[in-house]
Image (tube, rainbow, N blue to C red; front, side, top):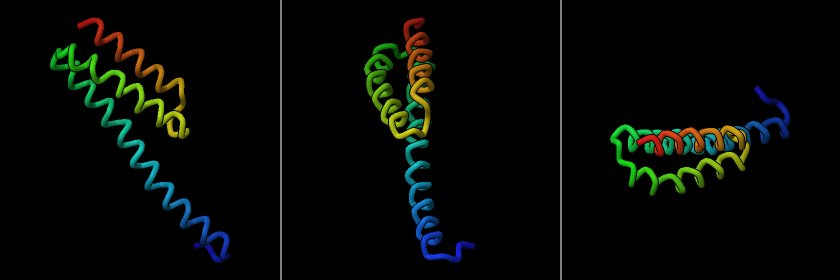
Length: 86
């Protein structure tokens, strides 16, 4: 357990940041799940409409450092390929 004033404050800050990161990670996973559901339903029009939102969401999360930018780009690229194959 933290026993100095600065360590206690740091611990509080880490707990707050953990909540923020969990929420961002959840948004990332939900965005991927939503687009995958649209692809499974073979709804190309809806998937194409959702694609810019997905890209924006992933890049926002990559900007914070929760995932790397290349990870976000790779996900968008693979999903775009799957949509075009419909």
